[in-house]
Length: 403
Image 1 (cartoon, rainbow, N blue to C red):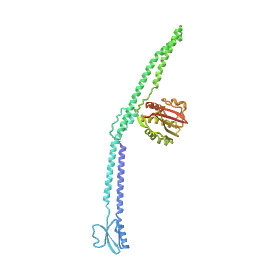
Image 2 (tube, rainbow, N blue to C red):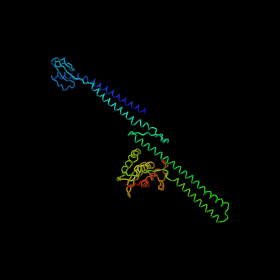
Image 3 (cartoon, helix red, strand yellow):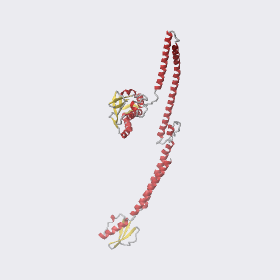
Image 4 (spheres, rainbow, N blue to C red):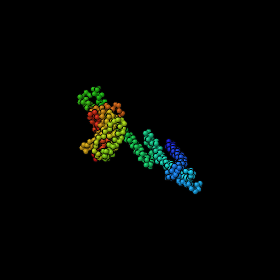
């Protein structure tokens, strides 16, 4: 608020200073114009001396020329000149500077009032509401989800505060889901570890009996071996459950299925990445396509394309990234290609697994989730994603159903 107050004071001070300078310039110009009638009177006298006549229309400040009667009686401004041995009364006008100054200063005053009103409006509608929200992002970053977010009716910040509230609710829901998942997995692991103890104890007892030769009968030894094998199968089943629990989806995805035109999606992607890639010196080629209506969640489909392009930026050689399009079996195929692929063919089956990073990812930061997220989102939208390597280029293709 202090900065805004200083800015307002500076703006008003600059405006007043400019108004003062304008007044000075007007006054100086009026002073220069006030002696013009004398110059015109001298020119008039010279014209009479040379021609014996005059053309008063050539002298804008002179209103009349009188050579007879009482030369010294007139209600107008005048001066006496001598030309050709005759005296003339030359009447003239002087422009009124007062009316000009009043008009100019009235306009400047109105502009000053409008500027002050605008500054007050900005303070009330934007600066003060934004100041009340200033600490909200920091509190959310610290994990304080109970920070109050005031509702703003301002058309400038109303949607912003609504979005911040949605963000807080989303963070809170994610935290609850994470805690619930951690609790469930912990209970599962504790339960399975307890269940493993029973078959493990039986295995140990049978193994000790066999080691000490307690079973002299061949049938008893065979039964003990079969018991060990059966208990081992139980443990193997428990281990499989643990593995399955560990490999379950750790991220929740929400898709709102709808429809959108392919051109809208492409325009969004091009507007986001074209300037960025141009700065890097990377060619961003968008192939020709026939506009069509796609059955998808537009935001999620754009997110998938963004993930593919981010991967192309990270792992390509920076020469060219291209979007190409094709249609097949009632689906639109959108392919993101990048030059300079260093991924090996044998790694293709694993690149869509969570946390998998290829051998070419050593120098690039990442967590191995981009392609995994793409696969999950495309699956929820009824589509697919696959990748291939061709001619030194990495090609990732989204298969989107047509509406």
